[in-house]
Image 1 (cartoon, rainbow, N blue to C red):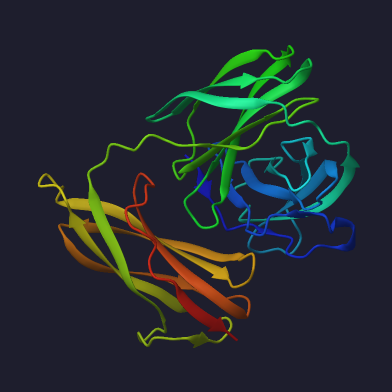
Image 2 (cartoon, helix red, strand yellow):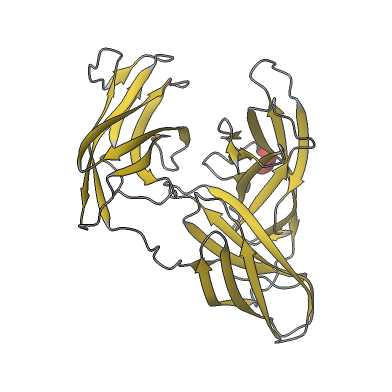
Length: 342
């Protein structure tokens, strides 16, 4: 079981040494694994149009809810040792100890160096996919026209938010691969249950591949329809707001209507209601994600709400989602609400 903790935060502006390389605009995904270690997952962008970068170092700082001083500081690097021009690479950083006191994590870009660009001469093909409790995914790697070493295939998985959050990366080491050789590989992973999007990619000491989207087979679930409507931000008395003071507790609420298209519909269906608040801008930053659990009993409508305390002034988009307890979306995203925080 994975235990999400307080949402991580990342550097939001480029400093002078990092104008061409930056952390992606949305917050990293932070959780505690079954052993109690805190994991931070995110991506780094190389915005340079001509130059690749290497030796990218990211610093993760772990905090509790009480002290200003961090509990731990851990440095990590990107999955790809060389990020091509206009490319991205995931990173995964793990705390040094299984510390249950960790409730927050911040990530900052430290250093990077310019690098010669590798050739994009690895190709990847899917050969089979099956999803039950584990994701079983097989494929074929075709190497470029030169021998390669340190060859790896990666599978990255994302959630259903917009923009999607990177939740984790699995790796299969293939080692030495001959020129133009084709090598089969298979992932058999118990993945984060929130994962709805997947990409595979590969690199070696001399070559790399494109990121390839993986389409999962449609899950065999009962056909159902939830419609989200009447999304609003209100005060404690239920008054609708278009502008709220900084630091004020408000409710994001909406109404969901459930209709089953099958006569064999269950009498009850549990669900999770998600609220995502994004700062307006060219690259919206995810300011807040909250959720509440509920249960539909038969068809009909039901109201949901999540409390939010704005911590920064600005203009925000409020988005709503309804997923079942298998973390499968069962509704189209609700109408977007606009709110100003002063």
